[in-house]
Amino acid sequence: MRSEDTPFEGGPMDGRVLPVLVGITGHPPKTYRIPVPDPDGGPDTVLVYRRVPRGPGKVGLSNRWKYEYAPEGVPPRRLNWPWSKPDATPPGKPDDADG
Image (cartoon, rainbow, N blue to C red; front, side, top):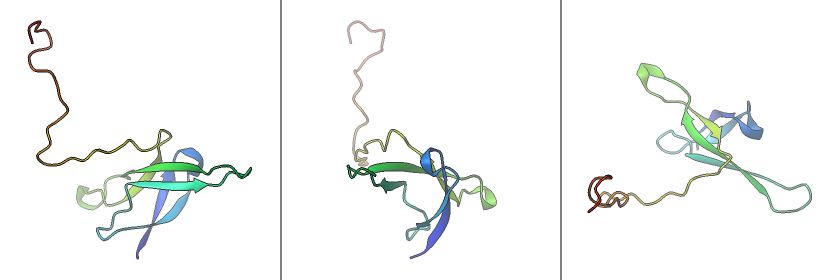
């Protein structure tokens, strides 16, 4: 597999560049999790970094990525099927008393 040197910004890994494996499309994973062992033997701490575009690349396309620290972790994903309805909103206008 191919890897690409990817910079990390924010958090404990700020300023470091690590080789990250890229997939078939040439993109690194959307999130990068780094387990950090506890020195006292407790549970590992997991640092979460989220992939963002590094800046404009050739011909205005963003072909390079960097990782930004996500202290809140990764938000839960929900399936987005083409036939799924958006989140339910009550019918009528917001000021409408009847609904």
